[in-house]
Image 1 (cartoon, rainbow, N blue to C red):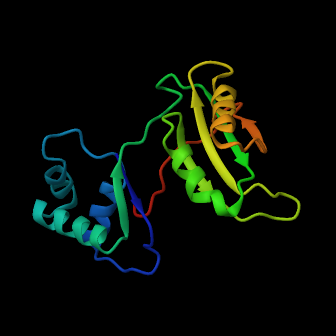
Image 2 (tube, rainbow, N blue to C red):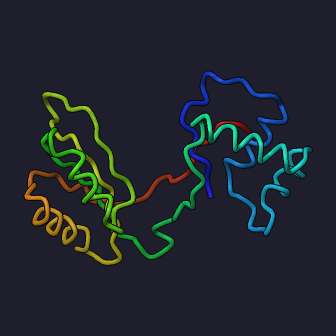
Length: 166
């Protein structure tokens, strides 16, 4: 599991809080009481760990705890980043459609540039060659948007979570 921090840059933490966040930002212990294990490793008690994480969640510093799927190890070795041109007025509608697809792990809207006018990005994962292209065709049919650029992955060079404290 990973902790996804949103805005830590302007915050200050005690040494104990930094140890807690370093541990919580890595793999969560596979244990019935993972926060107790983190507390022991950080030299504090479980209540302190839970209170810190709850406060950061309530303050919207931590968005969520979530599992990270190593998609290639899970058999999804065919992956493509797809850049789309989605009309601004359809962003929310198309976003709901795209995020509803289990083959899509990431979905972003980004700024455009005169030389690159794609504004919407999806990361599609497939188990076999051609599956990502099939998903793109289905999405084109569903949304009526067929202006895209498929960037197939050739080789994974790095896949890690952000490290905020060591």
